[in-house]
Length: 67
Image 1 (cartoon, rainbow, N blue to C red):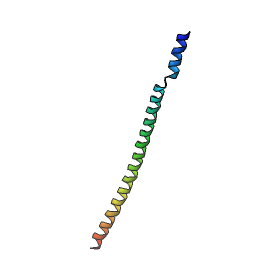
Image 2 (image 1 turned 90 degrees about the vertical axis):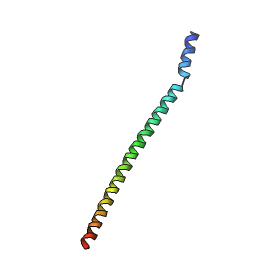
Image 3 (image 1 turned 180 degrees about the horizontal axis):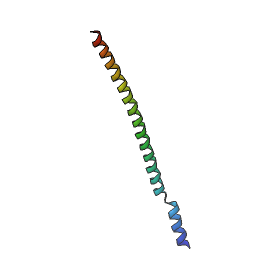
Image 4 (image 1 turned 120 degrees about the vertical axis):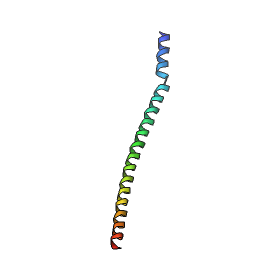
């Protein structure tokens, strides 16, 4: 009986696996957040870039039309 209790105590006291699993979940969550934020920032940057490109083309065409 004492041997079985010692084995059970070792199983319950071994938290290295649980800590490792929690770290993997935490790192995975942070990685997903970073990827989503990067994608959002890339879309905003692309939208700003296309808006500025359209503005520059309109100004260029306007200047060329006046000449």
